[in-house]
Image (cartoon, rainbow, N blue to C red; front, side, top):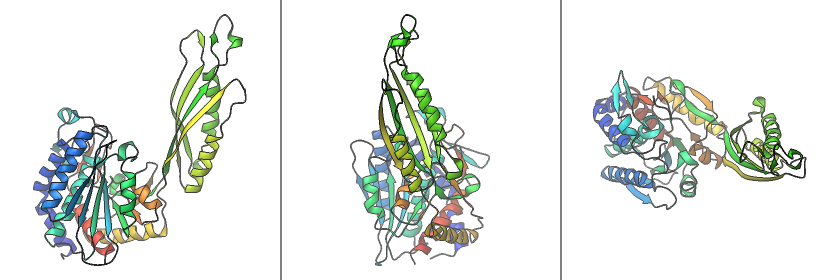
Length: 382
């Protein structure tokens, strides 16, 4: 087991080589809808982890890319820790040709580098430090990589939950907040689709015989937005609206996609019930509502706060001032937190531009993040 600054020096000494590995990860494009790309990345990582002495297992899925489970062996009886990440990115195949991996002014650029190929790199670095006995653990260290986090985690979640339930804590390698802050609170996320059927009629000859689905939708949109209350942690947004068939026809159909966010499980249930209970005042209209909550909130429980305090204390030992914050976006860490497992999120490499063309990381943060996560995992498992 190395002293904190020795561990930091080790990762600094290997930074140039590790950046070349990161370049390879970025160039292995893994768009959420590209099963082949995700599967190739999972296979590559399985081989890398196996070379470091870990047991890597591909978990096949048909509706999405494959998931990857990795276990660093331990001899102790205590609960293991889980390092959690995802393989998929929002960038279609070919994007890396338009915006190749690039080092400039202390930053590394490339599609998916911030969210979250650099987080995957950190997992490999932790496993390497365990392999070289720079970190010690009597317990198992588990790594799990979801294949579909960017599109809701529908395929990977049934595989993640039984693994997470065996663990004492989860460290989620999602990108941090600005300034490198960890995420100790995430809002829950829900999505609905509202379809309204009205009555078509000629807009000029006999409009009174029609029932405009678009008009009724406008009333419902106003009602939906009134459900939002920032002081209660609730937000509601109607993001896509479609309807009608022609300019001279009273529209017989309209459709809207609704995004809602909430701070607590109780708020989520309250809001979900209100949306499901939407009804037209005019009996000529009919409603169809589908969807619901797709990610629970990651609430800042005492266990989460304790895990952050431990991380902050260890960060200071490698010359980091680790802050914390909250976000309205969800992650797979929300699922593990909802299971009652202490989960610290946003531990990835500092940077900016998730899902944006200026996506990048700070190169100097890679060694200190690796050192922090290694020290934190080691401390949790004492």
